Structures are given as C-alpha cells and as structure tokens.
Amino acid sequence: MTASQLHDHLVRTLMRKAGGTLRRWRTVVGPVRVHDPATHVHCNWSVTPTGTSREIAEVERLLDVVRLEHPIITAG
Image (cartoon, rainbow, N blue to C red; front, side):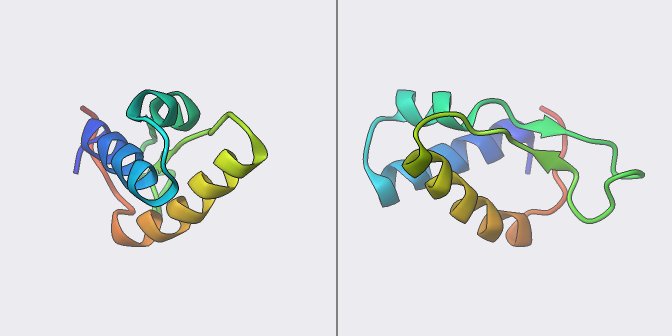
C-alpha cells in the first residue's frame, strides 16, 4: 500500500463510520508521513490529526486498527 492509498482508505473509512465529508476528513487526517523502515521497524508511517476532540478521537481509534493491518507502506 502506498501513502496516498492509505490516506484515501483512512478518509473514506472515517466518512463511512463518523459521517461528514471527504474534504473535512482529509483536512483532519492531514498528510501521511512515511519514515525509513530501518529506523521504524514496526510501523513506518504516521499522521498528526487536527480538528475537534471528537474528530481526533475518531482518527486515533481508526489508526489503532489500520496500523495492525498495514504497518509498512511505501511512498507515493
């Protein structure tokens, strides 16, 4: 999975589970940062969500699940 595919997956899943618009969730999730797997062995990506406390909590809950399913991604 690439960073852009992961971002799309996060945004669409949040929209389905929590409602709202794609545009809003794209803003809340922000960019997916890809780290070097040599230094981030267990999970080489991260996001820093911004928004309301409810929105951030929704993102964090989803991230816990998605990190288990897709711990290593590629840039792109």
